[in-house]
Length: 361
Image (cartoon, rainbow, N blue to C red; front, side, top):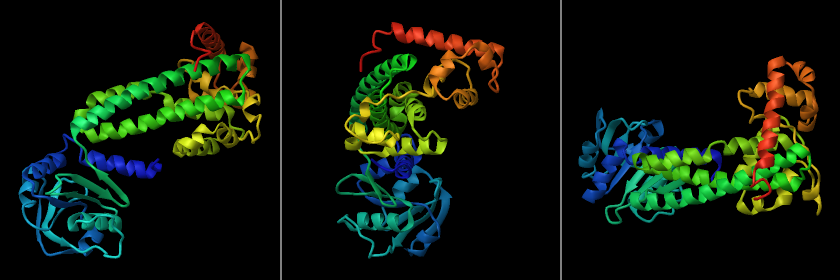
């Protein structure tokens, strides 16, 4: 799975060449014209140092202009935001010692320029009729819209099933939390399902970004199905991690988010990462929640107040057992809010008890 920084770079690449963007319109014209092209999106010092010949334009970008300039030999240099055509018919001389897996001269040059400068570089093959996008060590082949829509719709079905399974596991965990009957295995199961769901969300985010305007419906369904998933995962870590500092919980979450499928399938690994140690019986070890996740479900309860509650009482069971007068003494909680918190927890407990899915998952 790509590291977060790499993933952001990839999404930025996809946004630049997505359908509906002016640059993509020009690229599609070049594809139809079968002229091929080498385009550098960035005119910084490193690009200028390896550029030779050509002529300066400094003119506003227009898809038609890009198509006409692609009929000439040499590279086309655009500004970093893609809004201006800076130079055309440029010969690029990247460091020949930089490794490249490409065979064609145009694509080999594109890959080396991208690796040497970190700039976005686009190569279009006149023969293969394919758009190849490079940046630093990343390489991406732009795919047909019809194909992308098909695989995105399949991924949406997978996401819907994954989200349903996660919601059932969260209901089951919540019911156990109110009874203080949670074991480490219950927490591990939720985290496994949450991060499996987040993997599908990341995949769909790339599809929606690459589809651009063609992926508006995909993006809308993705937003609906992914809402709250990452927060549930983070708060589950905060509830059970043996070292509950914000920094450590974020580190654990980020590590799980980037872990391989094999690691996530290993319940002992997740238990160990939460600080429960190792051993054959670790998944059967009792675990009591601090209450972040369930308190977050109470309407209009700021996270700062939740944090104050957890710092004061330590465990959800102690918060539930507190009287309104005792809660009133917590910073930021008055008499009305103390009653609202206890009533909110009572309502939530009843909802979880009545749920037919609370023992599924």
